[in-house]
Amino acid sequence: MRGSHCFRPSVLIQFLTGLSHASTLFLVASGLSIIFGVTRIVNFAHGSFYMLGAYAAYSLSAMLMKEWGNAPGFWGGIVLAALCVGVAGVLMEMLLLRRIYRAPEIFQLLATFGVVLVVQDLALFVWGREDLLAPRAPGLRGTFEILGERFPQYHLFLIVIGPIVLGLLWLLFHRTRWGILVRAATEDREMAAALGVNQRWLFTGVLFLGSALAGLGGALQIPKEAVNLQMDVSIIVEAFVVVVIGGLGSLMGAFLAALLVGEINAFGVLVFPKLTIVLTFLVMAVVLVIRPHGLLGKPTASRRSSEFATEAPIQRADPQMRFGALLAVGLLVLLPFMAGNYAQGLAAEMMIFALFAASLHFVMHTGGMVSFGHAAYFGIGAYTASLLVTKAAAGTLAGLLAAPFVAAAAALVFGFFCIRLSGVYLAMLTLALAQIVWSVVFQSAWTGGDNGILGAWPEGLWASKAAYYYLTAGLTLASLYLIRHLVFTPFGYALRAGMDSPSRAEAIGIDVRRLQWGSFAVAGAFAGLAGGLHAFHKGSVFPNVLSIPQSVDALVMVLLGGLQTLIGPVVGAGLYHVLQTEIMRATEYWRIILGLTIILLVVLFPQGVAGFIHSRYSRHAR
Image (cartoon, one colour):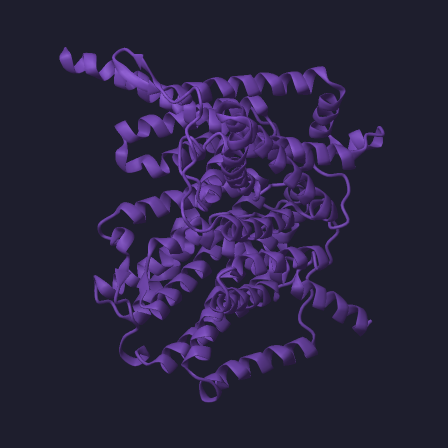
């Protein structure tokens, strides 16, 4: 009886803690949902605006508290920080997004990823690497006693903020002309434009509102937690989860999903302590399987026209391109005789990532499905090969042989659920499934947990660097040839038909879903082989090979090279890996250089580097 008495207040406190977190999540997720609803942009930089809001509030509050006094200065700093972040969103819209509105959604994602890198280093330059502690909120520093338990006043204030913001947004969208135009654009932006709505200023206003909401969410966190450079990544994933569970573009859905995720996080610590880090992804996966467009979401309206919509058919390589490919192969064969160990190692890594990127390109370009969790298969392959060598003494070739089969089996299981979805929902389900795999690996003793698996070096005939280099080159080149060959088989043509026009393909008897399921397995197998090669190349494997950044890297490689060309992922992987490796060695602020490079490439070469070269070559050939 006594235990029950102690339990009830704890449950209430935990419930209130969940509401407090949900309120913050709603502020950030509502901005993300509004921006996507109107502009159809998956704004990866939204977490950066949240982080900027926290940093700006830290500086502005400290400055204004000296001038205006404690309470006016602190709250004035919070409001000003949100407005400044809103202006930052406007600048991003005017300088970058206006140029790529008609590009495919995935290119906009890449451009905003470049903004993430730029903001990261700007924050590092201005505020430094150390965590910053802001003053507590004036007037809300104490606690309330609830059923004998103390609960912070500031957390109760946050609980109230969420519903107030929801109410204000409802009034804005239902009682003002601007809000009605935003709702009209959310439903059908082409029709809204045809009726004379100035889309340019509408989008600018939406970016201001959405970014300011993210900034407000970050600014309100400074009395709760230290301001640091990791705030962007931690919030953006949660915000995406909330928006997808609620339904893209649905404010009420985002509110309900934020409540759900907030309470799951709060009670997950008590009820399922080992599942805390993956519980929300499990819930998202279940919601998407049952309701493919989220709790309150609707299918997004397709675009009626786009300058990128018409894509030229994939052509077989002409004699000049074949000669170039043979020349590249010859250089790879001769490399150990011409360069040292560093260049040899760099080339081997580039080949492995080229295969990884090519496997993602296959499922994206030929299968028509975007994956945010492709690192799952790369990691499964890496762990399969490492475990077989270190635990079962199976040998290098056995490990490399098993890696693609195990990864393909996992891809078949994941693909069974994923092929029922499309667009961002499909991408987010792949992310959720990859996070579940990451969590299992991270928390399991047999995978070494956070310590990973060490000592997975190639053995026997492949023990020398040169021998393993040639093994890597041979398997990678053969795999790239097979992937390319598959595109021109009946399987590849049918996949392309299903991607270009699913209804027409099904009308002539093509089972589109079954083919897409098959493409998942093919892509997973090649990604698994790349993972196995990577594990032996490094001699170890850690959970980061299955992480979200690893999946994002693969996506960036594919888009940098160009989605419309088969050589694109190879070029993109080489370019991205060299940029990342060499810039990191040269300066601490490598992210801003890499980010600006990505942004420039997206703006100047929206078809990717290889796509741009290919188009110029085709014009010259004509």
